[in-house]
Length: 446
Image (cartoon, rainbow, N blue to C red; front, side):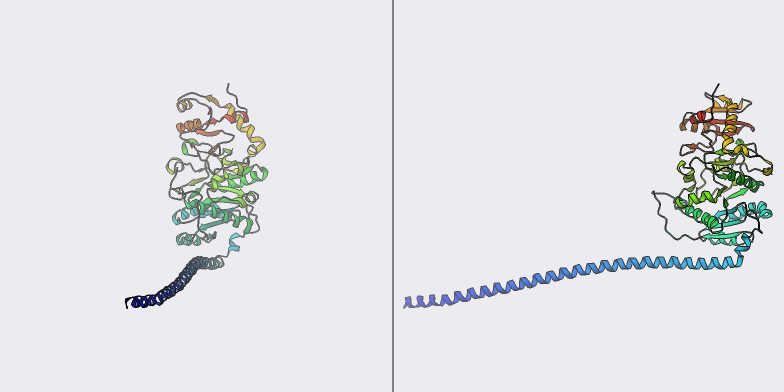
């Protein structure tokens, strides 16, 4: 009986085993199906996530474009408002009447470069009007404003005897080096725009450039008329300036004396259209005045400058942050003598004559060397010349006398062929003579 029960039990185990195996197989199959579905779900989720990220990036890019387009639209709206205002202004003022010279060909247009100093501009215009109004047909006057300072614009438009121009520049400034002032970039843009306007739109053959912090001398316009004639005769003269960097009261004497210089002075200067044709296409992004002082740009041409300045710069506050003002600008002597430049023969300033003329002055000066140069110079009743070997020695000697020590591209301020000249004891000249000057001017110390 026991054996039969054992046998029956074994027979029962066989179906149970098959059932167990079947259940396991079904369970495995189900798990595999769930695993496949889960994998598909994860894959779908990853795909959706990727698509979502793509859509988010796309939306972000489009939003950035929308912001940029809105910024462009806002700037264009501002330009449109300003341009409409300009059109109305010119219609009211009658630009044709202002530039009409009554049949006379102007000697040069005069432009005052302005930005945001209405009080300075008023002082400059008052000084220019004092001598320009009687000869306005020869020297049409313009104010070119950079930006939209309302006080400057109102002041400029309050004058009926000049033409107002406005430079609107909405492009952002990207400096080339960290820490640079963007003002120098905006100034360079303004200069290029204004000179393009005057030379190419208004067709002037010459332009005299002033800044909004200058007063002019009584013979300012006669000086530039004489300089214009000289520049027409001599193509080696790149520009004429009314400024002498060493024009402080203690260093000048003769209001009739003019010099050639390898250093561009600026600060009240005249340029011809033919020269601007060369400069305009390659005009720099910033520091335009130092750019003009590079040999690669003036190409051996020189600049006419006076001994006694025909402009006075009173701009203590401006883009240069008052650099050099108290030491070099405030003591400048503004000429107060009405020189009859038409009666002066300036032939000695042409390239063929000047080297001979100037080297004669230097050779006649008494050589001085050693220590205590200032004391020795003061005790000699004659012009003197002092040799310097290099830039450091020049800077030391210049510092002792109190003149400008600065060089640009190997040229000291005011120098002609390495020679810097200034006065001491009212009338006597001091010539600081460089190593290259000796050969170029055939100077020999006895």
